[in-house]
Length: 602
Image (cartoon, rainbow, N blue to C red; front, side, top):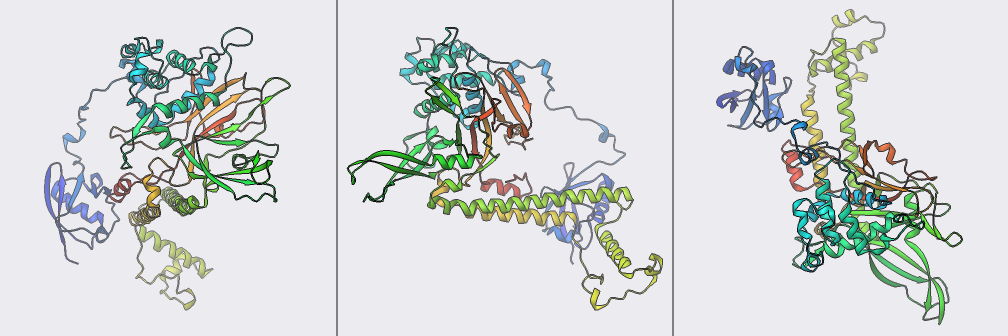
């Protein structure tokens, strides 16, 4: 094969080099050694973001004339090699940072919320909602209306001076914006005075006094969640760039609301009525709990089919109807409410259903959907599972390969190349097939292959792929599968950027209750940790840990703790689950992967 003229860039200089496709990476490094004086073992050669390894066959690179290779490394005798460059930015220690700067560093413990007297229901709700980054971002863009500003008694400007926590605004949405901003500037427990004042002003039920006359009464976290979200729905408006209509849209409607297709059917056979079909909007799914309910999916199915007594036009009297609900739109963020509290007339208070109901870290919501939506989601969901299996197989192969390399290193044969190792394995198989023959004797025997062993014997013409080539093939296969995945998305579904386009959800937050009734006990929240944010804005991989918000006390827990919150007694049991849609890779992300950049697992 003819040599290919390429250019190697090293320390600001360009070297024209003739690349021999029949050679290996090791030979190429010696070729560069003669030009740069950098020893082969000190060289790092980058080609399209991938590092060249010694055993790589240069023909597999597909190099083109005048292609640029990047070389890094310095000669061992170069004094500059030992010089450590001065950091471009001054290193700052936590002791030298302000409280706000320390709170915004990567890995910082988030702020808790002080309990202001039976306000744990509110604290846990606010922490779970704060686990939605998109909501925080939109709140930062929110500005109060003139009506809300005038109703704040002229004190709205106090938030500019850091005094918003004193109760500067009665606009619940503005209060939430200010609270989240202040929480982002501290790692201490913050007093949510401003928001509590706005909540009690907007909804006087949360200002109810305790029966003993001391302080305020405990409230239901689910009621607080519903009222806060309803207020955000009315106030937090956005422009939907995905639609031609320029009218403002509620942020909650776009990202947190779903739609039901309803069917009302009379249960009595004598009723000559056609089923009534309609639609409803929902902001959460209920999980009803009966004596035989063991899992979240069972409870959701119960809630999607309810019995209603109403007047029958055909019968001229009241009759029982079955109202069936099927989801026609899945939102990006899906809260699920365990209906654990019910009113007991004999005690005149809300009692709690203690039954254990398990749930999963991943929710498949396809089974709750209409047939039309199912047809759109099932191919995508199934393809995601195929991609995941391919990724898992790839990861297992990499770990196995790494383990084999470590074992080879311990056995002293780590100097063998991949081809030599393959030949050695084949020779060992031949030794076992020969039975009593000694290794020395077998090595001196002529190579004879019977028809029986023709499929396994070495003929000298076999080719073996390097580790780089195998990994590149696997990455290309996964990338192709992801592109096929995007091609399965229905255009109408793809246009709805606030909807779930996969049918799958991952658990991101949990609000829990400890105790035997809604009017007593204690609420806390768990929020899954996000990956660290890089300087370029990209989010890194998550470590699987969770933050536990127990009022002003914040600690880190493992994922196993979350799965233990299924109830079964007066201990902490899940009341609200916050799920986030598992999203599809974007075209931009796949372009980055194709160029050898960061790979996002499904």
